[in-house]
Amino acid sequence: MDDLDGWKKTAREHRGITRTLAAFISELRPRAVPAATQAILGRALIDAIGCGLYGLTTPWGRTVRDFAREQGGPSEAGLWGAHTRVSVANSVLASGTAIHSFDFDDHSRAKIHPGAVVIPVALSLAERCGVDGATAMTAIAAGYETMNRVSLAANPARARMRGWHLTGITGTFAAAAAASVILGLDSDTTASALGLAGTQSAGTWAFTSDGSMSKRLHPGRAAQAGVTAALLAQRGFVGPRHILEAEDGGFLFVMSDSPRPALLTAGLGTVWHTDQTCFKPHACCGSNHACVDAALELMREYSLDVADVDRIIVGIPQVVQTQTGFDYRGDSVLNAQMSLRYNIAVAMLDGCAYLEQFAPERIAESQVLDLAQRVEIEIDPEIDRAYPEIYGGRVTLITRHGNRLSCQVDHSRGMPKNPMSRSEVENKYRSLASAAVGQRAAEATLDIARNAFGAASLVPLNHALTEAEITSTSALATR
Image 1 (cartoon, helix red, strand yellow):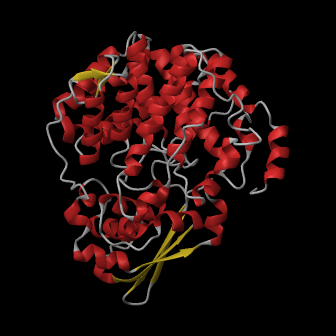
Image 2: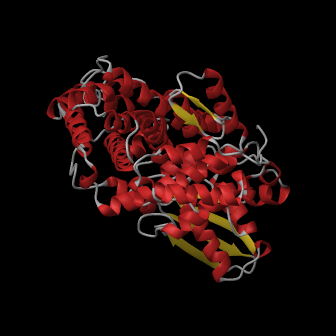
Image 3: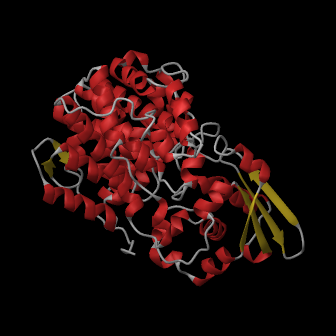
């Protein structure tokens, strides 16, 4: 809908959706969050903490943490792994970046990474404001639901094709929503917070052009912008209360050529998109997981060695081809994590795509480079039509003897229809957190996090994260 007149008509038909969302956020109470949704958010908290602690072993995670420490500010919230307290805005900048620092954090079929944005806001503001775990859980629920709905209303596949990184551009709304719950803002003030958040939205996919670090920053910056928006709104600074549907400058039209504003409020309060949260077993772009799972299944089922394979043909949606189907050069960790060709090749060689598979020396090895260059990518019409409701992928291996072996995966491990259990999420946490702070500290923090939503205070959890001693440095180079 790159048609301003058409958008103005649509905007008038949906005028008030920002205020409806704001009312939902301001009126949300712990008892209104379904038990199943709370359980998913409990896993999300543990997953995010593990990702964040490991993220502090990376150069980019440490750089942003050290920057936040230098910026300082009032002693409001702990700075993870820094043994100091800073302003909430600086705290969430660092922890949001850390959680997303290895692209291992939770995601959604709305093409967002909600945990890296929302959980730092809830934890830091809960510490500042002294609220209990149930209130923090409610804030996280509001943030996740808001981020999913804003992205779905923008039409994530279309917004992505315009080059937007949806975690950055929708995360500001999520952070503002979570902050508004903890600050106890009324509906009108929450609408202002959403407006101030949306006018700060930013983040593009330009990072894949040279493997830069900007993707890691987007959730932290979105969290910082959303918190700032809510704190300003609390002080009476008024934001545009029709930010999403405004005829001139409305977020949904700015970000997408085919926005779907009705999805913002459809089933609001009864349908929880938060329940579709996906957890990652592979340390790479979630859009690639179906193909990684398919390749691993073929290698296992037919007891193949890479030497047995002559050709690798991959069928994916058009959006994924744009996003991760670029020629792989082995020039950066970021591009290795995003590259479909590399993800499939290294999984076939190593039997997994975990931490070690993205070390600088591994991503540039000749054997994996050669195999990645043999991956042929094509758009599969059926899989393309189903995306992003289904993150599917198909891998076909043609052996040296001419056998054609194919596997299609519609629901990769970690997706809602093929979920990771709580114990699997906790084991993932253990592997990440133990690598960063040691096994004893990792287990102690896990014990606190398990009971966080029922706790009278989030101070013990924040204290454990602030005082965490990052005992190892990732082997990742700065490239």
